[in-house]
Amino acid sequence: MEYYKHEIYKEELNHIIEKEYFVKKFKGVKVLITGARGMIGSMLIDAIMLANEKIDLSCRIYALVRSEQARERFSEYSHNPLFNLIFADINKDRIDIQDDVDYVIHAASNTHPLQYSQKPIETLLTNVIGTNNLLEFAVEHNCKRFVFCSSVEIYGENKNDIGSFTEEDCGYINCNTLRANYPEGKRAGEALCRGYMQEKKLDVVIPRLARCYGAGLHTDDSKALTQFLKNGLRKEDIVLKSAGTQYFSYCYQADAVDAIVSILAKGESGEAYNITSKDSDIHLRDLAKLIAESFGVKVIFDLPKEDEAAGFSKANDARLDTNKIHGIGWESEYGISDGIRRTSEILSSVHFSQKDE
Image 1 (cartoon, helix red, strand yellow):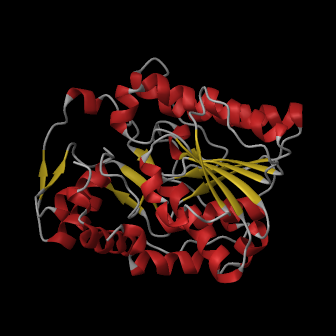
Image 2 (image 1 turned 45 degrees about the vertical axis):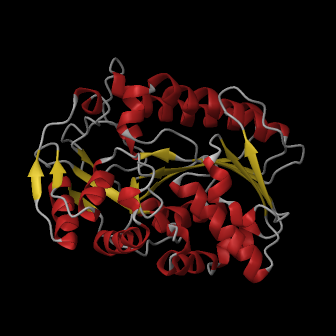
C-alpha cells in the first residue's frame, strides 16, 4: 500500500477540505502547482482532487513535475479531466499551458542537504531563474495570486540575539559557502516576488515553512529527521551526526498544506508568514530520542561524510514566531509527538525504509 492510501492520511485530507476557506478559494478555479510530486505539492493535489470528488469543487489542477515517477504517483487521476500533468524544468522549459490560471503555488525546490551539496547550481537557479520564469508565466496568464513557498532557511544563523524569528528578523548567512545556495536562493526569490508586485502589479504571498516532515517524505531525502525515521523503521539504532544541540521548529505535512491554503485565502498581499506546528520547537537530540523511543531503538552518535556535511545548515537555533499567521485565523492541528506518531504509523505500513533503494 502507498502512504497516500492510508486511513490516517485520508483522514487528514478530509480535515483540510472541511475548512471554509479551502472550499471558497478553490471552488471553480484553475491552479498551477509546481513541485507537484513533493511532500507539500502532492498532498495539496490530493486534497483538491478529493474535494472535486466529494463536494463538486470543480477545481482544475495543472501539476508541474520533472520526474516520470509522477505518472505512477498520480495514476488514479490520469483520466480525470480536472487533472493535468505537465512535464517541464522551470529553469529552462516553456510551460505548455494555454489557459489563464487563477493561482500559481510555487513549491518546487531542492530541499535536503545532499541536493544542496551535490547540485548547488540547480538549487540556486530553481529559486531564482525558475521563480522568475514562473512569475512571468503568472503575469502572462492573468494570475490572481502567486504563492512562493519560502523557508525558515532565509533567516540564516541566529547569533544568540533573537529568540524566535519573526517575519521582520534576519540572521547571518555566509554567502561564500557551498551551503548558502539554498537560503540565498530563497532570499532572492522573495526579492523577485516583491519586484513583480511593484513593477507588474502581481499579487504575491509568501509562506515561510519550518522544517517539514510527514508520510510524503521521499526515501532519498537526506535530512536528519528522515534518516532517524529510516533507522527506526529498520529497527536500527538512530544515528545522530552531531551533539544534537540544534534547536529548530518543525511542521507536520498536513499543517503545512492547510497553512498555505489559509495564506492563499486570507493573507495580505506582499506579506510573508511563518508556518510551524504547535508544540514543535525541539532540540535535535530530543527529536532523535522521541523517534527512537517510538521504535524501541537507541540513539548513537557518528560523524557525517564530507559531502553530506557540506550540505548541513550552520544554524543552531532557528525557531519561528507564528503570531502573524495566527492573526489571520490559522492554528495548527498536530504537535511534534502526534506528528511523529502519525508519520511512523503510516510509513510502517508502507515499508518506507525499503522503497526506492
